[in-house]
Picture (cartoon, one colour):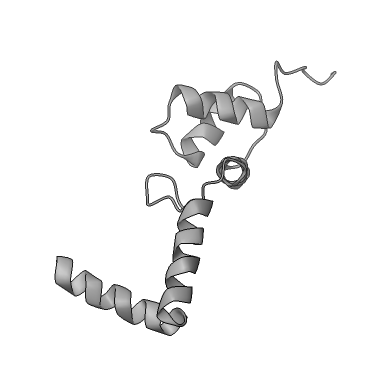
Length: 100
């Protein structure tokens, strides 16, 4: 039997499904696409989505705090101003105690 020609690439199918249903996770995406004839694992789905976030300048887990390149530059400036990473950690810890 000949291989069935799929409408789009696996990665594109993952992106499209995630765009349509942003609340579903990798396992549900993999299961849905399996029913449509795509052979993908939840790990592959996670990798595609993670790589997309990185390409868009976002680091971190979806739904959690997103760290951008600009955030890293701000942190770099803070570290330089207070004299190193250890001092920056102390400053942030003290600041956290003040604002809580």
